[in-house]
Length: 114
Image (cartoon, rainbow, N blue to C red; front, side):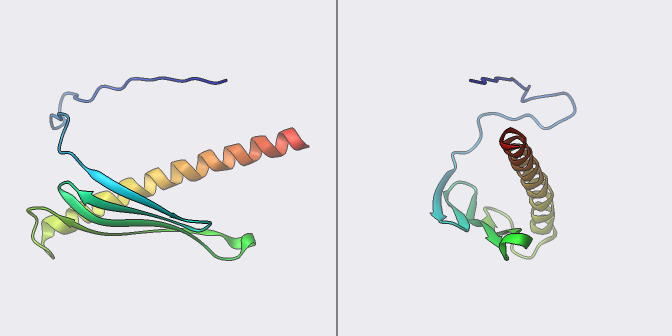
């Protein structure tokens, strides 16, 4: 068994101070084998985020989409676009990290079966 625990500081100099934050609730729906939908039903940002696996087995693609409404932010405003850009960048990093982890698992599985 592998057990890892690591602690990171939440508040660091030069960054906005964080506390425990607003309560957020998501409903997660698995549409096996190709889609997961996260529906934000409570909190300051409501809407949906979808992860979908598309394409033939030899050319899979991972598509993510989101449609969100940010409380207190005017639709179509510069602030809304900044939020969207930031979320897109953060989400792409998270997806890339997940794909890299899955590739390592596949590589380890192939090494064991070889």
